[in-house]
Image (cartoon, rainbow, N blue to C red; front, side):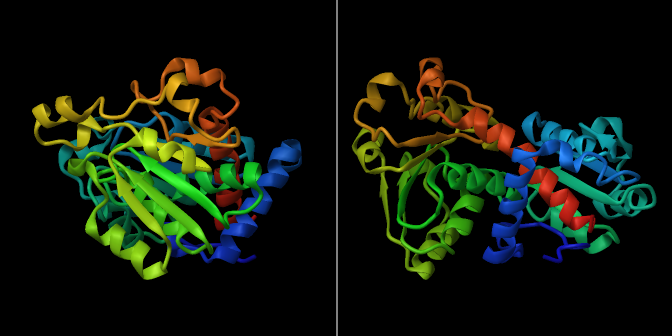
Length: 306
């Protein structure tokens, strides 16, 4: 599969066939990580994080190091020339003088596209505002595939902040390309999915329903994708305080859920998943975080043509 030199800015940049190939490669890496040591020797990854991150940044850095490559970059804009007013276009043009591939996270929608249009190296979107987070989507899909085997004929519930949650928007877009995937969208009306996401589900022909009742939705679900209510996406702190505890999953609620349910979360969590759930065999969010490293290893290897 030839992905060398490509960008990944949104979930549909790769075909289903290309994504399945990446998942196959990630599974081979999980089975035999030592076989891939050194495949990116001499290659340099630039991590440009204009927003805080733990899992995404660490997993990209760990992925590149495990492949034998090296890393440069910044974890906050105040430590770069961005603090002096440098544009994204100028930053990426400078970075490509030193690095072979770049990953960018930015609070503004469309920033990754601006970087990609200005760059002569592959650019990976690690989250642009409330828009997309395609490598998290690769992580989510790989985790579901490892447990369920297929993406077809499953009911996926997405709960919490569906309005600002870029991981939700990206996952829905990706899943609509598979057959017989049903969606249950659980949120308060103030945080329901944007109209353009709803339109994409309708266009795909997938079944979906919207509800504000998590307990009612739980028994139907094969996958529950929990999200936190994101304080950084609110302009009004009063609205955030009013909505932040809207949905909390705990042991009592899980009594109504399937034994085969998968609970996913892009993390970080605040209190939307009680700590008691961590020991439940249906909790997959830390496995999900580990899978993110392997799928990013596969992605970096492919885009670098190694």
